[in-house]
Length: 397
Image (cartoon, rainbow, N blue to C red):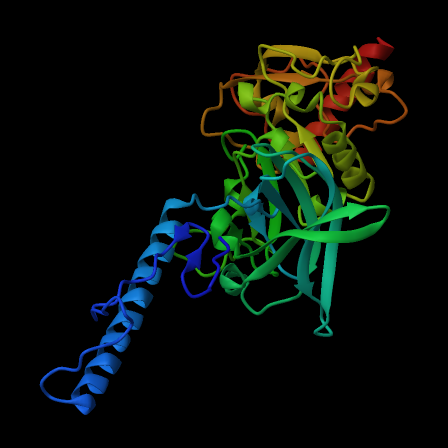
């Protein structure tokens, strides 16, 4: 609100001059009071002071009323809802942040989103990305990736203030700065991960059997592991970063597809996320796909879903009643089970028909006539050798 600071004028109206309390005859002469000329002069000065003070008070009241009545101008704002893929982050490497922009612009404009971080030399780094800023009322979301410096404690980064800026960006140059925000990771309620811990992600409701690799509650370290692995669960496919660098903190991603929110079809119309996952795998990431027992959300062999070209020639062989003891050598070096007669549904693949892009990883033993009422004796190596010898004998017979 612009306010004119003249003697009596504001944007809201005019303050009329105050009438003088001193009566003046028509001929322009004044009549002094009984106290004489000096008393009259003093009374005139006092009245003028009161008039000036009263006028000033009225101006303040009018300005205050004008400012209160005018609506406050809305502004384009920024916030974050993910600090790290899966809303977990580890310092000393790449971290992706998802920024949400609430626009108040009159029309859509090309923009440049910037996240300012500090590198190991103490210099400010501008991590940028071009985006399309919508018109008033529109919402935009975009990922930014930055290399966070090492820190003695990841939790210390929760309270660190980061500066985000939004510019209008035309012809390769910044123009007007549209918005600026100073935000910490607590806004997204992110989970800090220490630099000595590994990271695994589960796209699914539960831990997919990986909870034993995480930190044990009540113990400072997990002595049974060379490295603790923080397992981040309940991550939806559409919430993955669309840049491979944003996934680089994770060594393993398990895709469970055990709920409607975690189906691969969730990113059918988000090719950037699929491309990020492919690049992440090419750089050494491990993607494990768990197939549901009663459905085929991946459309194996039909090239109809995410990674369709990679899965096009795969033929899954479902087995519903496989004794778990038969699978044990491929899963563990133990020979005993708590439930010896437990049956396990699986999907397996014939290694002789695997496409060239695939190689066998876990061996499922060939069919056997051995009794499965009790777990087979011997070590895992002995069991495998015995089964393979039995298969070879049957083929030569």
